[in-house]
Image (cartoon, rainbow, N blue to C red; front, side, top):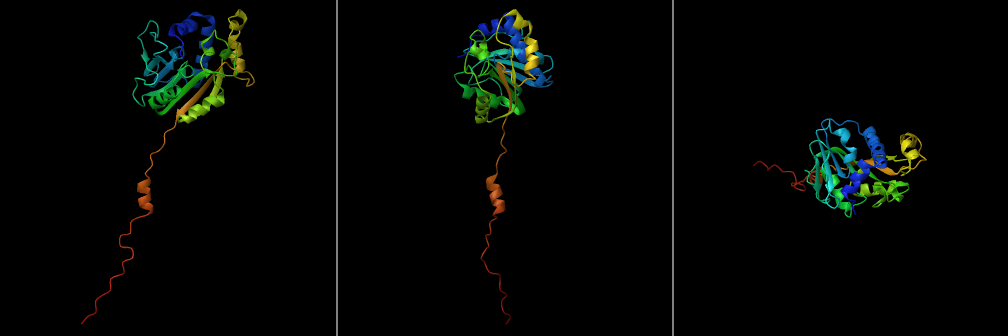
Length: 248
């Protein structure tokens, strides 16, 4: 089940641990997706903490929040771009979105198939989606004190297999949140250090997985036309050549 939007807001904007988590994931996202001028950027679940860097340069930024979670106005002090929606029917036109971020939207949903179908539908040609989910092997998925301790954690293989079943092609994957989910001053002060080490040390296990994927678009088939060209009709096949009539 989805977490309550008030709990998510409190964690990310009112606690030091939440701000550390927000910065770590957002920095990784921006490293993969720099400024996106002219793009439409959308987030589903509670992805708005990651979208602020795109407000200034993007054509449009949209924060989709599922009904069971609830919605809050965002960004604070600016024109609101967040809205409440059904997780099985997003109020976006097909192919509208260039970049899509899902965080706290897939692993907590009771309808993950519908969520992935909607994500696929709203992405336009060349669009990319970023799926941020709790790492099944990480420490953060084992702590109820953070939002990543709720829902279904994933291994990389599980998430990629699910994406492929819904016509996504995983392109690259990274991890984030290498510091333990502790509010201890030592871990909070050294969080940036552990993030920098984790990006260069594959043996460290991050708390979340971030998988970038593109939508598969199949070229239309024209089997009947190709078949007709390969096998043209021969309406006069078998008819003998004309024989000139004898002159009297």
